[in-house]
Length: 273
Ligand SMILES: [Fe+2]
Image (cartoon, rainbow, N blue to C red; front, top):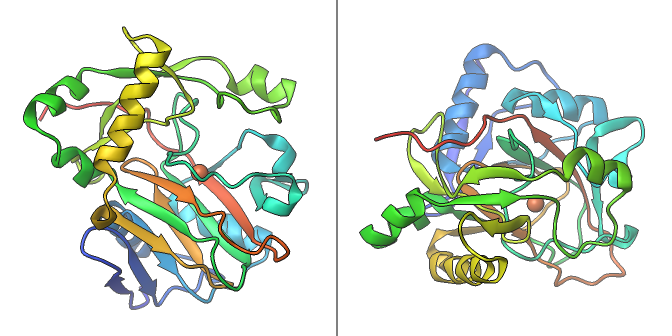
């Protein structure tokens, strides 16, 4: 196995990893080391990668089998498991905190982004450690959250959903609001504010108010890593214990193109301690 160097990016989340060239095959020992690094640090940066779409799919599969993304109009025609995030292509930056594709029975284990074109400044991606967010809550609220479940579908209020995607991915799916990480075995808050139709037993309005309050109370600067993009960065986000958001504060005459792959994960569950 090549020598990995893992450098934490702040006290609670994020690590930069050097010593990996994703153009070369990744052996079983390296896969396991990267899986552990992801579950420990929750956001991994691999700088200076230079990959074709086929090589990028191979690289991403180190973290799990790539899975199809909804909003299929943004998927790369020849490589439909790569979504192209390009805000000049009619897409709006996802600026609200969320975790990806909670409308799937088995949502992704990880979201992987590759910086193809990046603006001179701004346009960062932030990731929050929802494991620490959960631990910081008072005991009685943690106990309450352990019993809550969200009902998820495609985002409320989006107008760019194709009928075929709504048919395939729009059916309601229920997930626990606290899930146990399958590798790390710790618990984390888990929900998507705009894919949650409601929390079971609560009205949509009460659910939205509670979730919005939870986001603003728990996501403090000390649990966030904000990634400033460099061309060639691969950024891997553990979707099982984080929330993330894009920053739209860059010069829109410049391009920001990220290739996105999501990889298969487990069905979220809360395990007994
Ligand atoms: Fe996202």
